[in-house]
Image (cartoon, rainbow, N blue to C red; front, top):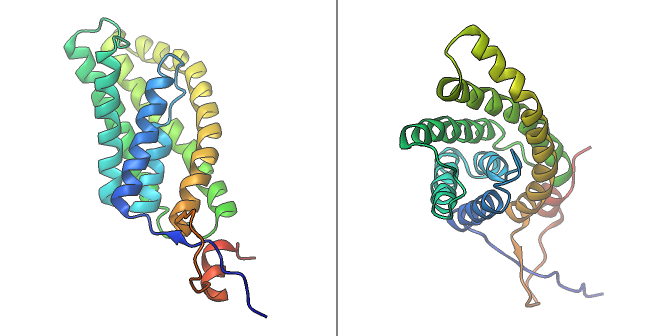
Length: 213
């Protein structure tokens, strides 16, 4: 008996994939800017490193932050900070997301199925979130608080609620965005046109769609 052919998936090249990640990062950051530490930059930085590798772990965070910062300050959401503080804080946030992207590269090649990959990426993402928050809190201490042990302690006391918000953000966005992008990375973009193209072999389908025991 003849099998009904599957819907063919289109290849999604790396540059197109990276642009999609940047779009999600920029739109999410701008729309959620007024909600402290709820953002999509961390997840797209992590996925860039995990799915695309080192070059894109650099390109995606930098492009996302450059475009979203431009939009935020152009729209007047950036407050009334001086240029020195803006540049200083940007250094810590930008390098923080670059580090998240680098952490993602350590997972490259370990994404073998959606279920297990999401659990792995989410777990690593939670650790990366805490590292990012500690790093940017150092920047907050340098630019806004006395450069004393007491000021350093105050910075980390003030960090606590924002770290909780950021962990909640990562716990929400990493599985949501990650599931979509990992599926596309492994299977391509489903086409609306159904054509009689040969099915993948069982071995090929198992390598991308089935979770190993």
